[in-house]
Image (cartoon, rainbow, N blue to C red):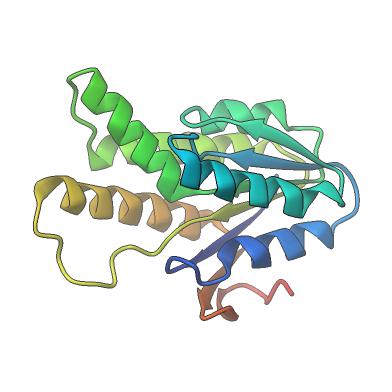
Length: 183
């Protein structure tokens, strides 16, 4: 059973840097599961910056925008798997559902999130999930944004419930929420 770590916080709070620092403190094969699709030049620059930050530490990378359970299974030989991030994954699932003329519900996200946990139950190492805490602001004014907030909140609750440790990042500083402080 993998040790599950959830790192959450607001945008640009230092989540990814903190997660990578912790992951690199674990020796052995490291796999980075990237969920961000390359949709424009600005995103391409961000992706390149993240890749460069991992180059010196011999990371394997799996780019997977929708099938996180499958990506985790592909990385099963890794000592540490870093998934960055769950909220982009949810965005991708919402986008795909819209393209197919379908709706995605909180129950759909709950099923997919539980499937991820089930895969983690069969992994030997550490799995670190990065996510955004999107529900701390005002109530969004449109249905799509409210749905996104609700889907992210449901996913985060399920992963946090099963996590061995949860860290909330604020202005680059970690606040331990559950389990022992990881670094």
